Image (cartoon, rainbow, N blue to C red; front, top):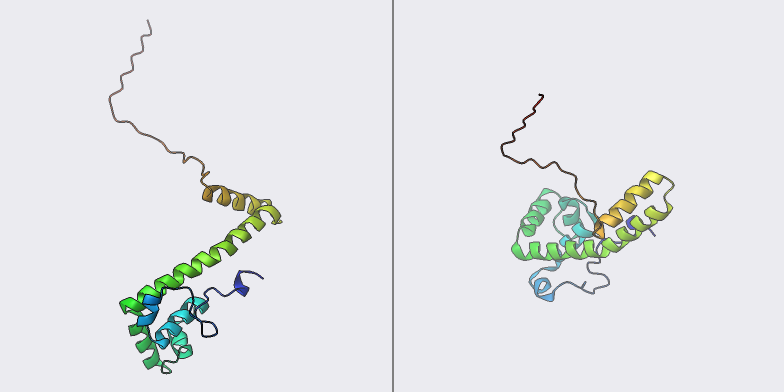
Length: 144
């Protein structure tokens, strides 16, 4: 099962709330939660997510959903949802990176994946830079 086969965001499944803070979830309507969960899990447009979340069809549903997404408690819920989604999917990405470093057909891909792993582990190479120093330099050459 690859990255694209896995759900990006658990959202509400089988009537159970995901692991998000209940203080935020209590202030949200069911439509708002469904809207955010759909946006995060499917990555679709606001218009598509609004339709799936039960908002009115067409432009009026998109406008209502857009207004809902601007509400502070909805934005907070969305940030928590995105953070959780990224945290969960980081493990899949790390696994993929390790597989590429050891099993890619291209040596270039193996090298780049290995460099990325080392960089993330704190073994980044020293940046080469030129240092300029201001000051006066006198050179005297005596040819006698």
